[in-house]
Length: 92
Image 1: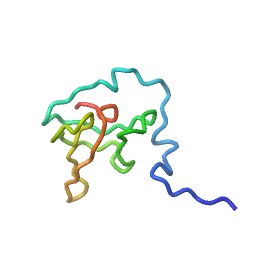
Image 2: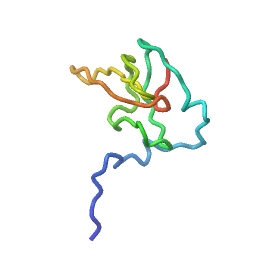
Image 3: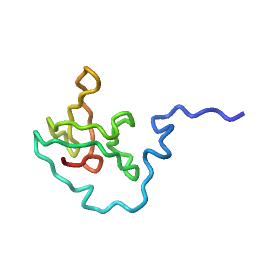
């Protein structure tokens, strides 16, 4: 019998599919505090990747923490904070 996977990237075969290579500029992006961003997960970079539930959500950058950014997101009625590297964010 095969044991079912329960990892954080399960059921993401279509969601994280990429058709082309990621340019180096994606890893060097800079954002200012207060910028509006969309979480667009880049599957080629596992480090600093937000959880798959937050794919496609919009938020506001509230802090820079090392190389990563803290993004404030509204999830239903709750406000959540997601830590993400810049290659997983796109400016609106």
